[in-house]
Image (cartoon, rainbow, N blue to C red):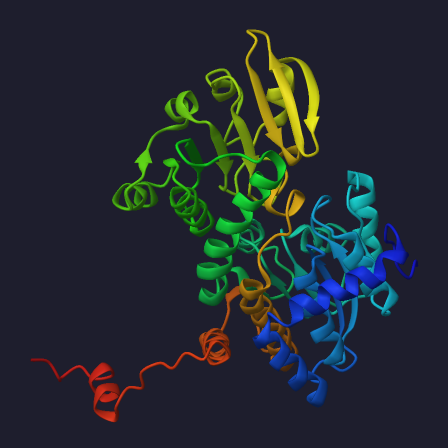
Length: 415
């Protein structure tokens, strides 16, 4: 068993500085870290975390470690690891197995290294680790948390098939995660990644957002805020109607493909953009993905259509079509906000990772009481995160009177 696998341990000092910068912008997690350090509610608990190795994740890992946990961390995406952060954590004694640019074999080797520590709790982002545990029939897991929409979809399918071997809390579905991290975090960081990679001018351009969940809402909102004409492609009738009512154009992909200057996928599904769509795109169209896995853009179809390809610049691959059109794929079709930028701002991840920290403790305290199914975050934990965040921001909320509380809990008090 290797103690750690990182690209360059000498990057540790830079990583520590960046982790500390993010810590100052994560007040809720700071509060929980101090509380956990004093109480040690996770003493001796072994955790394997498969997450994006960023400065925000580092602060979650250090919070759990200060709570007494023994942690092994691996990256949940081959292009999302920040190598200086991985080095800093490794230098501080955390078992880290992650480096930017892993191939598929290296990715799973790192995941297996993290699992070799014999975890009792899994923190996952995309469900690859939980799937691996089930495939390998690894035992001893008392529960898990899942961070992202894609992973929750996979795990609900596993639960519906009656094959889930331990309880999982869908941290992604907490309101203080989904409504803020997914919307404001993904919205801002996706556009940041695209601008970093291309210096794209959003004003006056047509941006096609494929998928209108919370992440799609955030991307569409931010693109419109920068002056773009936004087209939404959505298969769900209710979400499509919502996009229309929100003031966006709503088109099927075959029509949107003809008009888009920039395409951004946020669906959680495969082949949202595929051969018949590439064939309709205008010369110079940019194609990016903000969903967890690199399957939303059908890259094999794009490569099959191209007569040549060329790396135009870092994170931008140019594909030359037979008719002379050029299409540009960003960040290999992987998460553009993490592959070409820093990911979500720490202020947003503060709430997401506070949910993670609280849910890990909840799993430990409820051991043996939870069924093997996917749970939502307990409402009291979700509201606790919201209140702590408001306190940190110096925002006061209204308090209901006893009479108001009675009215809301009664059936006989009407007009």
